[in-house]
Amino acid sequence: RLVLRLLAARAEVLVERAAEVTGRPVVVATAVVRDGAVLAARRTRPAELAGRWELPGGRVEQGEAEPDAVVRELREELGVDVRVTGRLGTDLPLADVLLRVHTAELAPGSPEPEPLEHGALRWVDAADVPGLDWVPADRAVAADLVTLLRSG
Ligand code: DCM
Image 1 (cartoon, protein in one colour):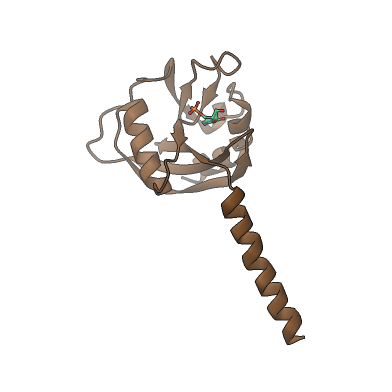
Image 2 (cartoon, helix red, strand yellow):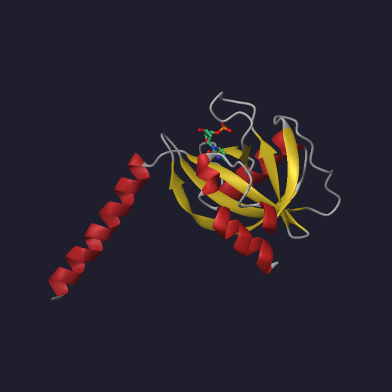
């Protein structure tokens, strides 16, 4: 039985390593929450996603910690300073990346968000989350978003 337990432990380690080696790049999406609303951003590209709403974010760079990627991407895309507060939902496998949703709040003294790389921005409250035209991946966390907004 001891041997079986050792083999099982070894198998777990190997599975974890395989996931690291074959792992897809992570794209962080961010639910910035303020006063019971989440900040949604309207995409302008590619054509099939243009006009639809997303949680802003982007690709994590090699060796970069995810919270640092969230802070960097939101500074680039929205001109804001954020503080990362947690995670939302489960990882979502996309074609060639893994989408992981973080939660954040504007840091004290942060500028107001501006659509530097999006067509528009909008604060969306719990009642309006389900009806928004989310990009398909972000639609998957809509129920978790509603729960988060209603809990705060
Ligand atoms: N993406 C998404 N939802 C987000 C952010 C990104 O589905 N909230 C997808 C769109 C692209 C990929 O991740 O396929 C990379 O995003 P970007 O083009 O914004 O770098």
